[in-house]
Image (cartoon, rainbow, N blue to C red; front, side, top):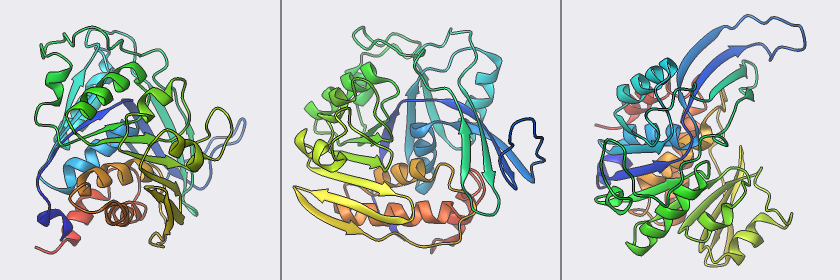
Length: 304
């Protein structure tokens, strides 16, 4: 039981907060087509948000999501879901009245592949130069008190860059989820202890992602490729890490869950061991529909 053997942690997850509507159907609808879903669910979403839920549920750990949500009625649904899974939310713009970003996802029943339409945080950036002055009344550096690991997804770039620099100065591991390139991402990446990139990550100069990330001085790099082996670089030493092969029900959020699990296992486990453990959690999640249905079966599967 990996979870019971590891120290309890406090994780800070910085980035996008959305509301996800998730449907399972035979296929995504084509133009002018109506498709009946066989299953449906609604949950808080976003890369770091899903990662925070996974982190919280792998052990009795405190996960804090830092992002922009606001006061629109739909925001209450997100808060309720996060509270159910024991994830705290610090809202950087609590008075904002516009709706939160909403994602609609159709998961194909036969393959587990998903089709997604969503809006990112481009119009929800929080400028991090000013003191953090919401109802929590803390300065930026105070947010890191007691934090053992910070995960940044790049959707709040200015805020992420500031917190990454503060965390680096305090020797708090900075993990970056590099799902895709975003303007200014190098400001965050240069501060990272670990970068976990997806196969979709492409640097602005179109160079090889592993070479580019290594040129920024990042010592620990992993590039996930779905069911294909993870490409790993540690201090310039390149290896491959096989991932579990399972019957896939749903790939939605698998990368996010992988990142949250990695933050749970690292740094108590060596880098590659933490990647391997996280891949087992993500593979388990892929055998269940949506981003939450895996949690209780996974807990039940662990030795007492």
